[in-house]
Length: 493
Ligand code: HEM
Image (cartoon, rainbow, N blue to C red; front, side, top):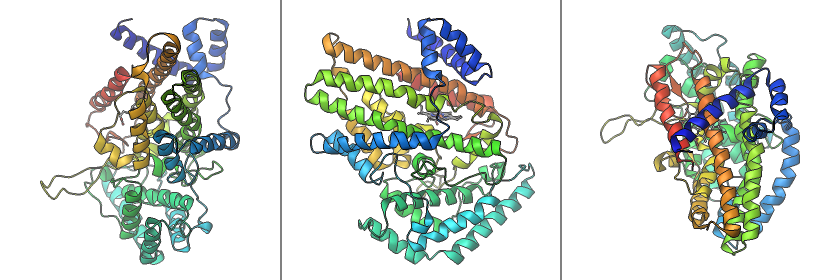
């Protein structure tokens, strides 16, 4: 197949696949398809399996949790043998608070006392954030935003002892994790990120008036801890990121913690939670993949190609349930198209920044995007692909220890050294299958993203969370976004 025909084939495949997953006739279609053993249909079957029950997230969490712990311990034991094992283990021990996905403590009663005020303020402000109906009137929105921010400032100045918070953060910087445990640090990081995004938008759905703001003066109670924690994670963005706002927004039992749409309909609340849950679950199901990446690299370095082959084969197998987390959720029945753009996505955007002292231009920070997910970055590095995100954007949004892990994986990636014959040839074939699965994901993602981004949202201008304000015209904006997705698809070889 020529690259062009393969590209067209994959695009059509992605669209058909999306159709199958989101159609109400899915069970009937799947039954029909399974009666035919046409190879390409097996591919659909593989990705659209309805056998895995992800909606019972607590069960998934508990059963995979114990297995993941064993795997993480095994990698920890390899730390002295290879830098790829030690870089992953360091990530887990430090940012993960000894676990992966990172342990995030949302039980404020167990937090250091001076931080509990932030959670009290969350409880007070959260119900004021969502508007039942978004207004198209700038004057009404201006008042709403002003009132929300004024109340926020009042509560912060009344309840937060900033000097005490600073002392605690300094203790953490000095390695005093006994007074500020890492899981509480993660939960607090998530809480401050939530507060900052809530203050930034002051109203959900996000409205045009707030989108057009160029910079925003956040209260010191939200600036001081944020700067300190961003520096701890090696990040320099004013906005939250995939870790702070999504992955860390689940407690250790798998419960969704801080909400955007408190008090609104079940449809809105469940769409919000299902969306967030993908990012957490990708990291739960990603653990065996990270471990197999590490183990395959170690085995290859030792010249044990047979066991290297097994580990690469495992990655291929594990990718299937992991991608199902995306396929089984990103459709209308789980994440309603009618609500996602207005009620969910806007909160995760940012789109403001400080004025640059040198040339007076505004430096704008983007918000969160799936492009910050560790799993895809680690896989790309393992396959020997160039990173999707430029260095500057990585340094803003991808924690330092995650960047370092990907860098070490890339350094030791061995795909390019494999011969065509023998065990090498078999490993190569497994790599090709991994690439195929990623290509199907990227193709399906391109189709599905477009459907969600083109829903009506008259209260706002075209914007994605990861790329901020776009062109005024939605068609042009989509063309701009499509370039990224098509480009990545073409690079995935
Ligand atoms: C309906 C929800 C979503 C929409 C509308 C959407 C949209 C987009 C867009 C427009 C891009 C390209 C521009 C950019 O880099 O920011 C992108 C990239 C990306 N998205 Fe999403 N996204 C959604 C959900 C997700 C989810 C749930 C994941 C994975 C867990 C994900 C993973 C990625 C990745 C890995 C990239 C980087 C390009 C690549 O590696 O193929 N996205 N997304």
